[in-house]
Amino acid sequence: MSQITDTPAGMRIRRRTVLQAGAAVLLVAAGPLRAQETPPPIVLITGTSSGFGRKMAEGFARRGSRVFATMRDMERRNAPAAKELRTLAAQEKLAIEVLELDVLSDVSIAAAVERAITRAGRIDLLVSNAGIVVPGPVELQPPAYFQSNIETNAFGAMRVIKAVVPHMRQAGQGTIIQMSSALGRAIDPMLGGYCASKLVLEAACDALGYKLAASNIEVAVVQPAGAYPTRFQSNGLRYWEELLASLGPEERPMLDLYAPHIKAMLAGLEPDTSLDPQEVADAVLRLAAMGFGTRPNRLTVGPYIDGIDPVNAAHGQLQTDMIGHSPAASLFTLK
Image 1 (tube, rainbow, N blue to C red):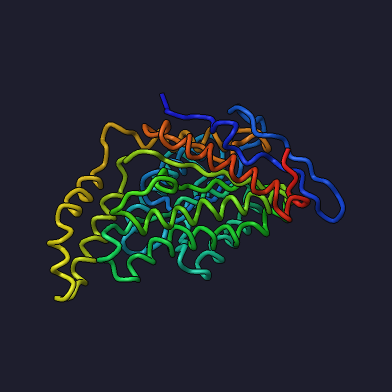
Image 2: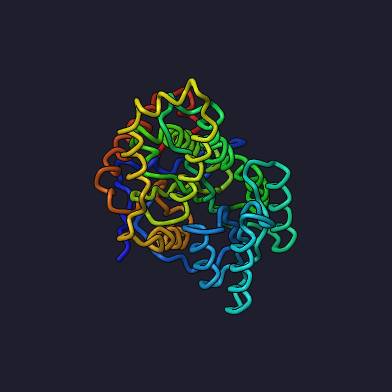
């Protein structure tokens, strides 16, 4: 059974009445998980070459959705993954179209979104899933390596959201599900760049949730809380090897200084084979199936729920109190 928790009530940034052009738009308070009896959404998912993204693409398609499964580097590194997904779609007669999308490129994002809109007419649901981890002691990382976590995980996600939102606004409704991590709340000392990227993402999604509510666009964050076995870890080790190769003679003595930390880091990047990535994909499918206006703004999935949910609850209460005393309170009246 999936370990899924409906985020505690104290944590939710409650749906708010947004005053826009003199009209009040009332959004319903978050409620329990339940199915939404509407046609399957048209879905665009980033990062579908493997892991959560691949499983979500298959899951949405098998439930009747038209899916635009996107990934970068389809002609080289991810060519086998793209071919495999296309073959699966053909064999099972699934409505999956695989598109090139690199979250680091505005041009690539615009082309993929435009292709999806041209082909399907709209995007009902964006699942922003693409992400990387570039591990290592912050002191040892060249700035570009630290920054690459933030550039992909946070700025990349915001680029895609920015490209999709105008189409959702024109359609009058939309849903954004952003994949984050328990490490957007808790800090792993050897994954400082990754944790920083997820902290940025969490804050940006909170801000977006307030502002996009006026356009009938919901934002929800999913926080996997466990070392689910995916290519995420092996890719992280590849980035670590690249970082090691880039170090100059003046930096190499620090490897001895950090030797025990690095050993612990490498052990921590070992995937937990007792966990099933399908659990996270199923949680996203259930979240997407909820009625519009009923989704919690955060959903934690995995063995460390009990540690992360209280942090989410405390943050939610602080956020509610802060907005209540903010000059923006007249724009974001909490229900």
